[in-house]
Image 1 (cartoon, one colour):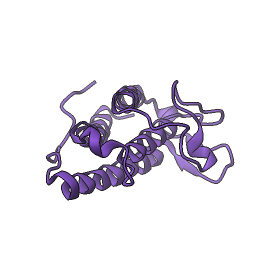
Image 2 (cartoon, helix red, strand yellow; image 1 turned 90 degrees about the vertical axis):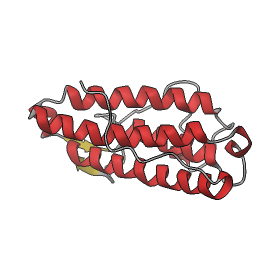
Image 3 (tube, rainbow, N blue to C red; image 1 turned 45 degrees about the vertical axis):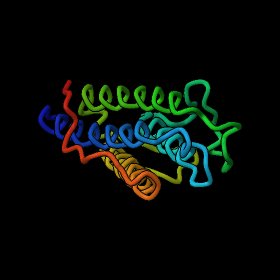
Amino acid sequence: MDQSLKQILWRQFGASIDMLKNAIELCPESLWDTEQQFGYNAFHCTFFLDYYLTLDPVGFTPPPPFSLSEFEDRLPERVYTKAEVLHYLQFCREKCKNLIGTMTNEIYESDWINESKTMKYNVVEILLYNMRHVQHHAAQLNLVLRENINDAPHWIRHAKDTF
């Protein structure tokens, strides 16, 4: 796979993850576990970021202490802390950077298919789908921040790091 395309994908996907991270970091503890579900939405987005970055998602399990509650259409057993979600997000950021940075033509041309076979995408398309999902939730969280603390993180044009 072309190195310049990898850099472009990473710079934009990395920026999306960084914007989510900045929204989570800015969230005051008093807003984390409220009826607006800031903490849950941050977890939900991070969980699916991880899932969609898994080339063979059949049998996917998130790292501890996270559960598969997202697949079971229920809230997790407890509200995960901001520190736990940020740690998970950093894990996913590295996973994303590694996937894009080491992508071969074979991976580039392969498909991502979920266990129930209801989702089938080319690997690059699932990356773009995933990035849009992250952007969607980062925007929602920024809106919650604007409405509640009259502040939100600044726009990030691109990830500052490269591989």
